[in-house]
Amino acid sequence: MNLGPCLGLPLGAPVVGAAPPAPNPNLLLWTEEFDNAAWTKTTASVVANDTAGPLSGSTADRIDYQAPFGTATQATTTAAAAGAEVHLDIFDVATTWTRYEISGTFSAVVYVFSVYLKQTEAGIGGRIRLQRSGGFLACSVEDIGDVGSCWACCAQLEVGATATVYVRRGGS
Image (cartoon, rainbow, N blue to C red):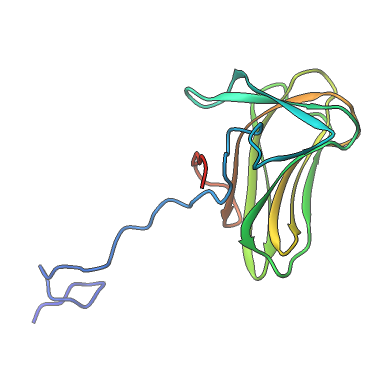
């Protein structure tokens, strides 16, 4: 009997249940709509579709911070019983679209949070944060002390240590 090299099945036999791996899913909801209720805003508001985004056909939302340390946060349904918060402080958000990313280990699984950001005015600082919140993972785009604005587009949370190709996701 001639066996296939990987599966140990006879050549030409149907492979039932085997499918190519799917792209790494985005664990966030409303990944381009920071104005959606899935993103909780604290001393921040969002102007939807304020400018052209970095990807073909995308638009970016402007996050206006009314007080220092304002946030736009999304809590996920991804359980996280253990793990330490990770964040990246961006002391001068780029004037061109830049994908910022951080990775952290929660409940023995490595996750990466990435978001495209662009400043609206000189000197705006920001922070992206990945943390546990109420036993689940939460992702934030934050101000680090300046009252101002930045544009945000295309947030992604995925399993792995480095960001992969962005996958848009609407509601549940």
